[in-house]
Image (cartoon, rainbow, N blue to C red):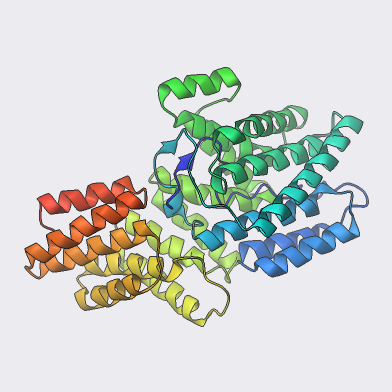
Length: 403
């Protein structure tokens, strides 16, 4: 199911991670252990990440960071299995209501809940002991922020996550008031400011009354500052910026961030998918092809599990670029491969649209209309209103190659 950008969401792929380097409490596990865990997570090596965070917990059972790492990795693993870990899944309109999503595997849901509850309990104890500790408030805010994110992205419960979301916002604002240098706290505060600013007016006003601050540009600025802050959450903020820059159509900036992430996490093949998709949105099909070709080569060599529908998504993206470049034989091969693979309805719908374009270009208008109608139905089922609109427009007006 294609998910919408939600008001209870600390952006997917934003990992409310560890306390920044240099601020660990005495006796806490070395930051390099935690960093290794997150490096594994960012690289899609989820089993290795879990094992590393479990080592951190064993070394220091009274530190929240290891527990939060386990919860974060579990959350992302669930999204990966569902195939909802790319920017495409969060480019839609803002959702203000709950969504019906499949239940996560019981083992993973239990692991998430057990570890995030433990992380929060430890952090709350620390706040009770030292209410002026910016790090303690940061830990509380990161834990409840992750709770809100999980409820929105995994359980589909926007309203169920609002209490946690408001608390996360308040805790991280507290961090900034205690220590204005802690720009890492701006990741959550800036994210919610951006989300609130994109809500419909009436709901935005209710969010203000509930205590959420707004401000679209200010939100982006805070996340940009978090992305330059020398700490573990720096990478988290960069993943957030990939999404925000795409939503804001700042494609050059998005691509610059993706390049940086590719260099740091070369095992994360999805970064090449994101680069190709971003280049397509920017109207640069040749650049998109280069990124997608490299990414598909990596995919074919990679023996690790694939995200649900991943093959279909790669092939659809490359087919769309090949249509724009006039490589119709290559586009047809990718379309057929995409439709032969397991895929989500919105991806299959958009693939059908590309097949319709090829029919139009070949002069087979009746076949093209049939494909566009099938595309509209699939996009409707896949909760992709933009895909439906595109297919319907092509039913009315044949596709022609842009000169």
